[in-house]
Every structure is written in C-alpha cells, then in structure tokens.
Image (cartoon, rainbow, N blue to C red):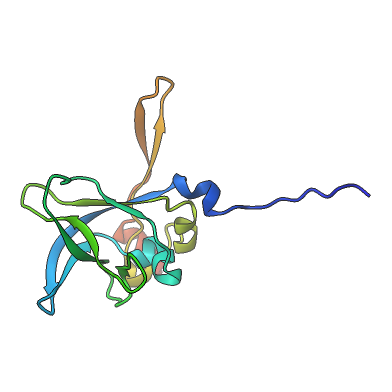
Length: 167
C-alpha cells in the first residue's frame, strides 16, 4: 500500500505575518470619570472578529507620536455594540498609548492578523451596524527592494451597501 499524502494547514502560524489593520483615533472620551477611551475609525467586530469572538490577541503598536507621553486607555470601535472593544489581556482592557495632541491624529496598527480576519468578517458584504469594509492596500517590494503600495480595493461606499440591501 502506498504511503498517503497528508496535507495540513497551519493557520496563523504560516500566514500570521500577511496581514495588518491600521486605525485612526477619532476622539478621546472619559467614562465614569476614570475610564479613558480612544474611539477608533473602525470596528473590531467587523474587521477583527477573532478579538471579540475568541479573545485573540494581536501585536498592537502606535504608528506615530512615539515621543508623546503615554497613558492607559481603552480602545473602542465605532459600532453600537457593547462588545466592540479591545481587551489586551485577561480581565485587563487598558493598553498604553501616546497621549493625543492637536498636531495630527494618532494612528494605531494591529499586526500579524493573518488572512483569517478578512475571511471571517466577509469581504465587501454587509457588516455589523452597517460599517463599511475598509480600504485594502497591498505592500510589496520592487526588484530594487523599494517599498511600494497599491490599492487592492477602495473603502466600501454607502451606495454599494445600499445596493446589497436591494435599494
């Protein structure tokens, strides 16, 4: 009898580095006079379902303002759902991020999201709270090693979403 071919798929261990999601902090808000929240221009529930679904943790870093003083904050998405937030560790929702200032918005990246976040959240379809699919960029290097980008897909428009709903 021939030895069978065995195929396996190693999930995030082979494709983890293939994805990243970038967010902009829209505003800072205080809740209960002690909880500081950074509200992001996206939703964890729609773009990173593993965060709220199974409590997955990803590498999270500020992309700018590294020289600013840091503070503990909670990260919240823009959906209307109470579960649209990032939990950094078991029973610890706060993360350390630079303080906001008026010069430019704070940008935050979540890295090693792999190929699954997009597959789980659906591409171009209807999302929770009608939050549109974000713009997708492809980062690559040319033959000289220079970083280049191209737009794979623009942000989903309200007309595209209404068309999916039959309007």
